[in-house]
Length: 439
Image (cartoon, rainbow, N blue to C red; front, side):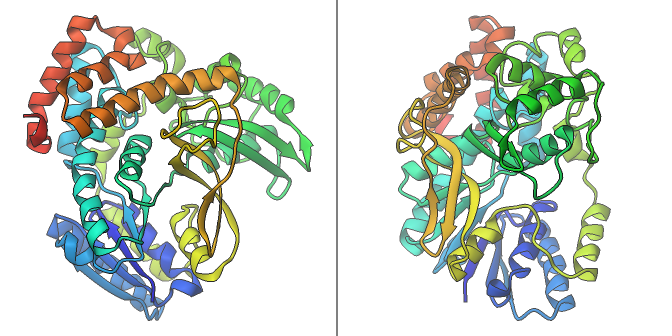
């Protein structure tokens, strides 16, 4: 029996999706799924829905739920982290305080003030999880879904925990591009590498032939409104016709792997004023408002769908990884792992996103080589912010928090250095309940 722990199981839909994913594999039908969250109410909600799914499909899986993290982790084979420390209340501070200063984040979970402070809060929780894992399940694999992905994985890997960070942005981007270029399933392939939310489509092939130039032309035509995707596209989430990502492609030569809303926060050209933002992204997609709008009806609908239809794995990698480790079935996934020379022109020890082979030997990152110079340069500036944030938590340094904010390209494009310092101090004060080491 494989014992899988989901830390942050009280989350809205994602923990239920993951639980059903695990149950969809024959090798994991008898797994022990341990749900853990500090909120007993939301934990009970997820437990109830997952038990319904188990009963509906006659699964022999065992479901447990607890608010005791140490009890949950004892003897675990796999630990999945998918929490948001402080919930929507803390996230609102990440977004609304900087907005008063003129730093407007539409997502705020990767870089910027939001990514930095979400990372600091997350590392505070992850430090405790790492200590418990070293004692209670030292051989367990940590599958990290919590954002900011690169910061969190950089930290837990440095604590000696075998960590792989998982995100769906690469597969989403590859599928989106297939629709834009007009390639159908089974006829296209790709290779990507970089860092989380800022990886690059380095190769794109259709029927085995290089199609990068064809892809670039199709993306340009799509951005101009002269070409449509053959697949359904959520243009609201994509920021319209992906003008931001198209501009980054023109700058770097390669298409980046997160939506225009996300990507607009990572460079200093797109969000300096409201008018500038609107010129790139006509209709706002605001993740904070999305989080506030979640309702119980959506979760109930998801549970009903999982009970009614045969279980099938979603696009998420976690269950695929565990199935490959248990059965030896080889798969290739994209994982966020320590850079041990995998990308030659990014720093050793930082967190990179590369193709990984998975089989009975575990998750094995593959060599990606050197990125194109512009792609590496964009990544290096991001890595500087991530490094300062990780260092800030490890050393409990307020000065390093200030430095991370000052190095962030959106923040520094909008604020003077004096205002950066004022913003850092205000955020540290407002978030003191979740950051006691910085009080």
